[in-house]
Length: 616
Image (tube, rainbow, N blue to C red):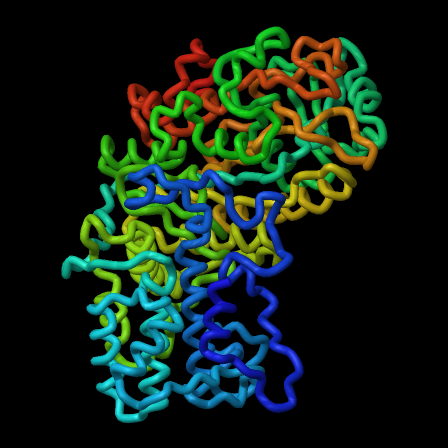
């Protein structure tokens, strides 16, 4: 809506011989929204989202703030700047489809449309006032008006001066929010990176399969001496069972204290299967969000979240804090806090594609948000050499009674400018030794590999990554869904492990695969499955003590089983606290501080797994 409002206010019009204004295909990926392109039933954001900064401190909700991150700020600002300077084209990451000719500011020969607004006067006061009315409904502060008037007056070319004034107004917090702004004259504080401590480097990667992965079709009973568990599985799953049995990738579980001597992995998990056999991958059987151990009789009383709901369960997996001891943080953020405050490590956190609560913490810099396509530079060809300094002066710190959402945008915008410059510089030196698949997970893991390759340039001891991947909500055609998604996941894991091994970094890397919940064992009427609870998850890496299945795979898969609810919804018997506690210790958190990372871990004492159970 902001983009459309800007184009209408500045009187966008088609160039001759063009019949429609066509925007670039990845438009939603650039700015976070596009008509008729919702990510899920929750639209583009969650209604309960609480941002950082002053709005968060005031416990204010701001769903749209979910989209105000570095990649999307970069995409929006570059697109609007490009529209002003070149028309709607692909020039300098613009919103258009193509740019067949060299891009030159003021030349609209590449454009399908251009802005036709003309001010009523050539006077700087009149022009800035008109633009402020059209683009900020008159909210533009006197201080920012003066900055823009001075910049306008410094140009000798009136057309170029108008373009500059338009760019500066859309760089103001008043344009991006409905607040008024009162700046206090002080520059905003931009976090600086701490010096590395010199400890051996480690990277932790948390992969969230959003939608609820059908993980009981990922880890399947194979050979079981006590009874024919595969038949029980097949009878329960009916048309959605993975068959024939010979298609499964068999793994030995004879020393894992499970109901079966061997299990089968999904046929599409060939790279993960090899990692298991190589001793680099473990399974966690029937894990999930838990407040305390529960059974059929008390599970409703023992729940502190809305079971079977996407938003609440995704949030709980990212928090792992059912008592809400610190609602502003996630489990990876608290892990980072412990490493920074207690071990004095230099830690950086990266969300791939979009933000997550998992990485939110109190210490160190805010998590970077990186698009897997790469990081285009913000305003690659500025209209004047000191434009970045002018933009910074328009987004200074504000008074206490200034609009909190304007303050939030200004803070995020300037941090994005800083992060963009830092990461574009670092990634220009990144080296990848392996070809990754050209899909969302392949690109995400490739970006992680690139960032890891710059660890020495960035001076970090620890990198923590969060990779979300959607489209696992298979209410129909679950077999097709798993074939497609698991092949993508497996190819990404295979390429990434190969690249890390080539760089002698595989032993320093751990990947955890998760999902908000598993799915019902019984199929629904559309050859799909519905929301459930417990699921099976993988962890892999060169330091992982692999070739084992931890936890307890259900000994009975029918509803007669002690952990099986109606329609084959399985009560988890392993908590995420039991998994993340040892992972935090592997990352460097002291044993006494694990409770700071997983505040509810004592509810599961004695904890079944130690760091030496999971890692070499």
